[in-house]
Length: 539
Ligand code: F6P
Image 1 (tube, helix red, strand yellow):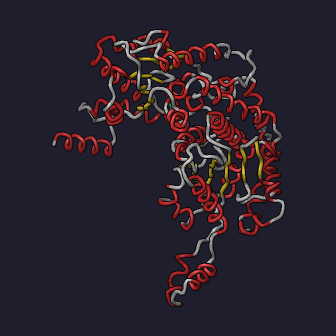
Image 2: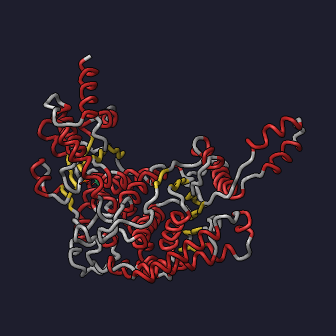
Image 3: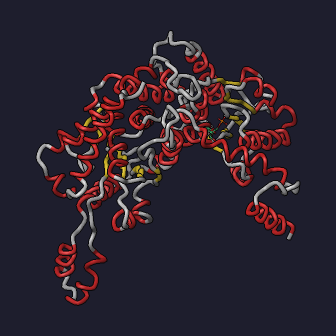
């Protein structure tokens, strides 16, 4: 698996040559070239990827395609779909595609997928319909999902994204070990009407287990031991679930071949099914499966995840270390946070699959907020700051809420931003505009540099018809596979996350000292902070 040395070196050289060629070429000139839309857009049904405002052209794209081929990414993709142990540092396959039916059902290990799905969807329906009731016989009105990272971000993002379709109990999320999170979510909720799902692949994560114990105490304070009937769990660790007091019929399993950040398609998606129902959850899976088919079958030059992956690789070759993800869709407000984990936990690596140090920059910093709000906060820096920060816009053609001309305005803003970033406004244009308004020439001269926009800032736009369960599933899978492609080109294993371990272990070591125990074994800086904390909390 992986590319062959010489072929890869030549392919990288070609890509960097194109990067050197295109870096000084203004986007204004590139975008004006004929045939750009044909060369730099691709679609899967209504889902369209517009790369016309990326600093790319057909030649650079061809070099990127050769790089992807030389890296062995297509073969690695097929190995993933065949259940081969592509997660080489943990020696296991990465079979999240099995959760949406996109790998052969006889692939070892995936036989139970359909049965577990049927169980958790049936449980969601029982809670929604009132067939499964609270300790006092009443219906559940609220559900709290307790989990963190991959056991939180997927469901919280999807439940918010599908708010237009929410027709079940209200679903809330608690992730942070900061007691403020659980306190704020439970305030105003009635424990007699609330179900708590404890979602943890390992069922050992400190934050989740701490919140789970406090939430169970909250339920028990209202309903005694019968409050335990309000608990359900999602985990691979069935023994620990039983020890916590959740009986087998309310425990929904998954498998070690699903990474946390790829797990919303299985039982971790239970809160999504609670909020929008099993039928819509199946549409979410169908959308992801449509993207899987496309990823597995479409030629590279028309393959959306491959193209998106190539753009990611290209940006690093151009020297841009960060990407802003800006959905022009309020209900995708948690999508940037979701992609942050997906991308940065997968690609935030400094060594290759072999353990050798990487020779090139790997995953970028991903961040973002929905538009139009973002325009009124950090877009200033995107337009006039000293760094180039590529942007990924996401936009739906149809709104889910028909309200006067809100959507037309949302669309106009989105299109305006990508054009403004690309084309800017020269000082001359700024001067002419001020002159047309009859401004004083001295004032024009003084303000022109401030009112000019350098432009030449790349972006891409992902357009789809409307945000529903199918479209969301497709969009998430697009980003999942994009991460896979980038990892393959950089030679990274995207399925482990050893980088989160050190801090977790240190937090466990520190806990006794924070509680007043012996701190002598810690470094001077940490001892200083422990002393200050003790003084401040005592005072
Ligand atoms: O700390 C990172 C991480 O391991 C994530 O990869 C995972 O999604 C999260 O913690 C939560 O883990 P668990 O589901 O086992 O509680």
